[in-house]
Length: 409
Length: 82
Image (cartoon, rainbow over all chains, first blue to last red; front, side, top):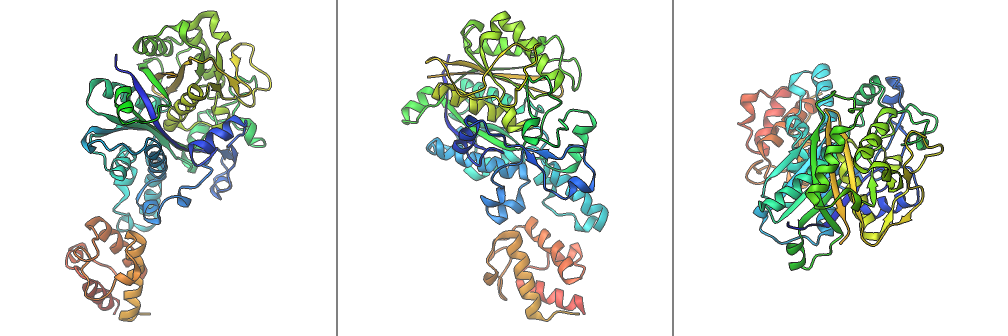
């Protein structure tokens, strides 16, 4: 089976404007979650007043014209893609052999809602002509393809909070099928607008710990009360090991396999039996040619919702049995919040860096671990074995389950 | 109050710059939007929408395709203000 490796990574998140800053802040145990300062928080009396906005605003990085022409979700995608591409050494392959497979959960929602406001308040003639190309869900994939001038297809993967991980699983397939020599994959999300916050809050999905934002995302803690909305983008450059070695690229780690399953259970609730999620883990391990016994690190989906964290534990227990309680687990959303369609890609980068540096990232805010989830939760940066075999899980509304297997090289 | 030709030019140049990044000093009489300034049709539509706001005029859709040069646009806006 063809070995697929990661040769470039890029990210912008609430912890930092690039991968090194994000990773360093993560290892320091920082939280990127803060009170929101936008006037609409008070104006609409939002029940949730905090989130994980990007640490470095896109306007500080991109040209004014790029800000005008792209929805924030595509702006962040372009920032992360440029970093990843540069990090990969800017491969000089034929542009027709470079493929983009990129994810978003929601797409250009802010652009859509702003345009609707303009239409209502000022009439149809005031609606900007760029509205549709900015709000379409494929806008981020298209923006990356145009920015890097890649022509091997610009695909969009949309599966809610599983999107980013699914895009990486897709990328592995594209490379193994031989339809591209390099794949740029990952995901983005930026929906800091009162409507999605009100809507997520209406379904009681969000933490309401307004007085302690940095403590709000607390996966596995008994007092967890919902996820924390984050923002950002993460991009990985993947290619075959043979191709990477031929061009002398540095190799971070291997994406050994990936798999996607669906629950067909409920549109938002995870299957409490965890069968679909467990099947995704097992399928990904099989795809990677490893067994459950080989896995020695997990980056969990762990959003900090009361039922979600339990459901994932149930699924993991189904796969690993009681040994699951001995495998070190990081729940990095404790620091980053939940980037929705971008989250799987960011967590895959964390997992790749863990495999590369042989160090597990800390989980913060687990002050009182839920006895129903007796996992070995990594609290401090912790050394990993020389040969790391890790999984990174993502699950999304719609019953989407996506898992990738990361292996050190 | 109606703006002079030079004031309309300055305002239009700023709108073009806001939308496309073309330097304000490049937007001068004698230039074609498409051929000289490389402004595509969707940008042109955005500039038109913003110009209607800025100058308080209405630029009918069937007129937009006639506004090929900076002169065309400035002259149209100046007369439409009147």
